Length: 118
Image 1 (cartoon, rainbow, N blue to C red):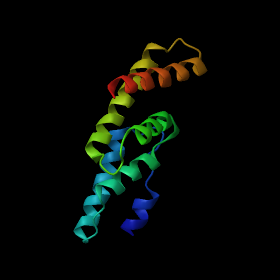
Image 2: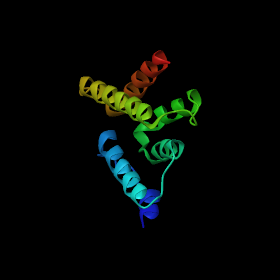
Image 3: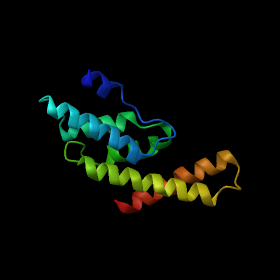
Image 4: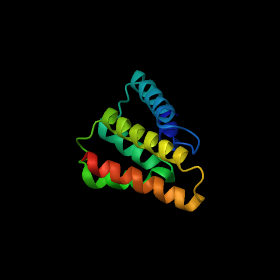
């Protein structure tokens, strides 16, 4: 049953990274009590597969720039939370922009900020 929940877990569109990670962490802890342990790599890959479309540019950048076998889950979550905050910050400052232009600006701003952090 926990394995099924783990496989079915996806981040919802209105959910934030912290809420999603709390669910994943809870499932991981429940599995541990039944002697089933998920590796760090499995958790990292699960997070990257489970994110909604608004994170797609970040997922691609992480997959290209990082060795997923060495990437720690807490570092990934921190990186995604930073990206999410940057998207929200840009979205708030562009509220008067055309919707399509605003979305493009959000992704461009967040992506360029990520590139500078590498």
